[in-house]
Length: 183
Length: 270
Image 1 (tube, rainbow over the protein chains, first blue to last red):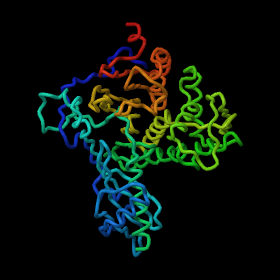
Image 2: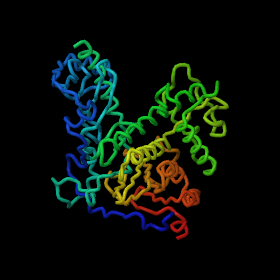
Image 3: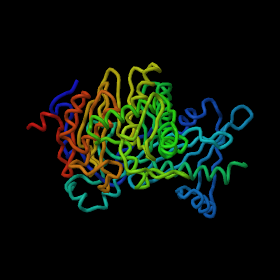
Image 4: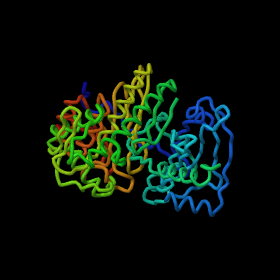
């Protein structure tokens, strides 16, 4: 079973990487309509964009311990037959290296029914500002994005924490309690 | 099709041909998350950590299986792989919460952990941290669930612990944590891969000790073994080579200068 030696892995040449600011690795998982059908199969979705005042955003951030980025929260009321089946909210969180759009599905009573990542973008902004890190790419074409060898979509080796999405979900639950629960 | 959900503290990505297979995989991972999250006082691990020293705690077959794996790797690694010591450290660093009324862990190792059937007892207050093995176990459960759902091919990636099956291999890029750029490529075919690496700031609070590596990757028949073995290789490659061979596994490490080196008997003899 064990394969001896190093023939089971291939060391990639450093030259495959050409780096510039902006999105580097990006994965689009689900469109909003696809996520809606995955989380609430067969339901109808009525969009109610939630425009948040500065006061509301501050209150939500204080109660949740995490600030949001959007002044307009994209919210859909989920309808099934003549009754409300729940809520569907699309939100964004921005970490040091990632930019994530996700959807939260809430039941009519506000319980979490599911969280789906819609879009994940890894950025290299932090490194770009670091001259030591940047030096190794001197001579490479600026303005192009990173290409993985053969466009490999499966990545291992970076320690990824989903804490930002967890914080975002907590903030959306506060938003729900303050603005949607009695709507 | 491919979907991604935040579970087990990381992003879990599932690729399969049908929504049913993907749902089955996520349901399996979500179950492991519910049973084994050290952040949830009502999870089985949460209950062991709060009450295990006071009374027997009955657990599910899945938690029992992970505990059996933990004890196996603790024994054969000469104590290097230790969920009790890992838990004490995680508790001390605040990565595992202290629940109301919970007694802090005594300094101890996995010898205080007693498992008989599905019943867990702790000789003294302790804190288990399955962080070094539960992701791999969850990946294996997800793959089994996809197969049961009739999937012919599929891939599960739980924050770098992967398992792929099907007639064609799955290409995987392992990034160098120092640069976050792809450094190594592996073709995964009906087997698993796990990587443990430093954080970008150079620290590794989730890993058991200092290492000559910044990243260690293990290929093994299943993800649970691969996950546990990365921690053992991380601590001491020499001691790990026999364990790798025994598990039908192989490993490589990336060092701070970006050099990639195979870790097995041949490499060590050379």
